[in-house]
Image 1 (cartoon, one colour):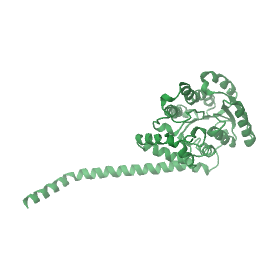
Image 2 (image 1 turned 30 degrees about the vertical axis):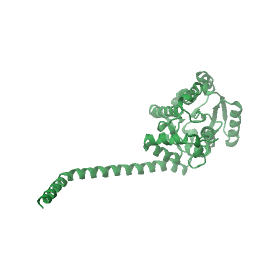
Image 3 (image 1 turned 45 degrees about the horizontal axis):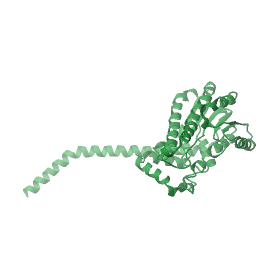
Amino acid sequence: MAAVDSFYLLYREIVRSCNCYVETLALVGAVYTVSKSIAVVRDCYILARLHFIPRLVSRTDFVTLYGKWAVISGSVDGIGQAYAEELARQGVNIIIISQNRFELESAAKAIAEAYRVETDVIEADFSKGQEIYKSIKESLKDKEIGILVNNGGVSCESPQYFTEVSEEKLWDIINTNIAAASIMAHIVLPGMVERKKGAVVNISSGTCCKPTPKMTAYSATKAYLDHFSRSLHYEYASKGIFVQSLLPFSIASQMTTYTGRMRNNSWLVPAPQVYARHAVSTLGISHRTTGYWPHSIQFWFAQYMPEWMWVWGSNIFSSPSSQTT
């Protein structure tokens, strides 16, 4: 009995001495839970404010807010074409840039007839590097460029190891995904600063949030675009320039034809027209967004998931069994 009493007394003493620590840990746990709850509520509010409320109110007058003309690269199909059509729908004149003259003129004619706006075309192959920009600058010099959309992008036809990508393809990816966006912004920003208004939209990718194996060069260039956009925002916001980084995940276009497992899910992989309609509604509201609310949920999960889980998922979607034949 004496031994039992001694143990009981010792136990009571230990509990008494640990009470302050237990209460402290409980307080820390409560603070953490409250902070996370507030963060979830805040994220839900941001999601609603960004993706739903703007669609319920009257449209923004982009011509007055930014300028008469919009320049969109890579705009004869996919996101670029859909984005150009959405801007034209709101009365903005459109300049489209691509490397195929016939497709350019056909797309420009369709936009002009459908939306009663002026259109112009610039034939340029961004993969050629520095030599093309003199003619682009000359073509834009007399126009009030209010919106620049850097949509031009090159990726590999299918996921592959970095050393399997040819040097020529790597230069195409670098020149089109990095150099083109940088130089185009360098060309149009002086005029925007002079007028104290304008918008630059750089279409990056949701893959920039984590390292993505077998898409190494592509995801790295998109990470550059995201960082570039955010830095430009801090430089030029005070001068009246709105800079936006768009971070879409999979869109039903030629660039994503190998994601066979996801392509059939139209909710997660929207048509370019659906994505563009949502994305344009965020212009002037958010400096960094996926542009599409289901993608925002994806991005939220991607940010908080462990890196190993992201890599594991990337490997599943890049495996031969997930690709279309």
